[in-house]
Image 1 (cartoon, helix red, strand yellow):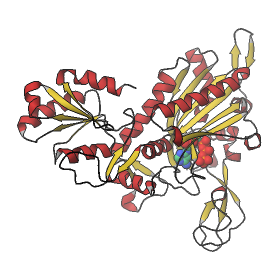
Image 2 (spheres, helix red, strand yellow; image 1 turned 120 degrees about the vertical axis):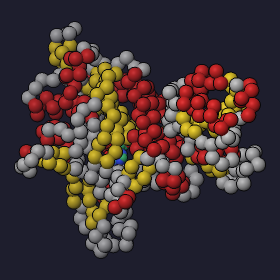
Image 3 (cartoon, protein in one colour; image 1 turned 45 degrees about the vertical axis):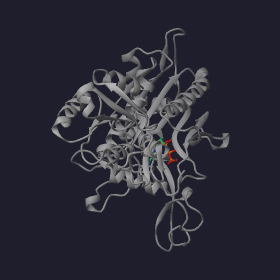
Image 4 (cartoon, helix red, strand yellow; image 1 turned 60 degrees about the horizontal axis):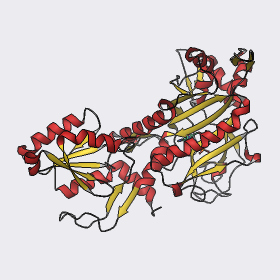
Length: 443
Ligand code: ATP
């Protein structure tokens, strides 16, 4: 990856309205970021692409949107009140605090010595209702997964699903990270895309392997380069006691240990979670097997990806700077040109309509064209400045197609469609433009 690429991404993200520091007007709030006009489009596209491939196109998956606020007992049963801890160390000299596994033996800020590690619970607490009693104290969920386990039986019964089947959910999660940082990589409020896939115990290992391959294929299918992604499979001694297999899908995040860090976790969790809820709630929410007339507790495979880390991975993966520029237009002043190679399914705008001149002769029909296209897709419109500059503005935000409406368009009823990556230009009849784009943007 390019040098200083994180600084470049953060700067591009701010300059073009992808991501802003949360509460910036008041000095910010650490570990929070706001997704601006382009960022929200890209994030929505990531979530839609995940939903499409992992739920819509599979016959064995259903969706859920559980509440963020849950009964405190959920987190006692799941083990989060006991185990959701990171080791915290404090520098004796400057009193800065760090997550122990993320720092060396000395304080990175002043070189001072650390205190002994103390456990620090990562769940954020809040209070519900008008009386601040102990019962009113609840947590903001640190993962979306528990909503699926708690609703497991309701989902299975209402959809009359037979094993194997899975439930997918996208939503906000909160963790009081000791040291948030690396832009949106580690934040205190983030979004997860999680799947719990329920199966018979004897199928567990097969399903775990199938999900590893399916999830890798999803990332590659959205343009993540092979060299930027890999599996890190946990060794036996690294596994949680209930897990029969865990793989981190790692991306080549430039700040990661040896250049890699976690993008998604895929864990074969056996029957740990459902059993924990059966024991704590006293309710037998297992699966009734019609064939054998017995109750079993399904095993679970959990692929869990972060939306914010996905956003950052797609930005890093797609970012390219071309020294001296690649435009052949005379407007090109041979500056460094930036192209964001985003898969069309992820790109904030699918196309931009650019009239060659802002004279009404061209701008009126060009505006009519963009109004039509906007019924189907997010399409930008830009009539200011020279055409070369406008192309570069779209390249930088990853718009895959620029549609130029010129004086010939008035005669031949055709427009020029320029491809962001190859810069190849096609002359396309306006009457066929939607079908043309439909084919190009298919996902
Ligand atoms: P890490 O080891 O980096 O703290 P984790 O192993 O605790 O992550 P999981 O509990 O497996 O993470 O969560 C699943 C996914 O949720 C992660 O792969 C990541 O994409 C996302 N995620 C977790 N914590 C954060 C966070 N603080 N900020 C942004 N995304 C997060």
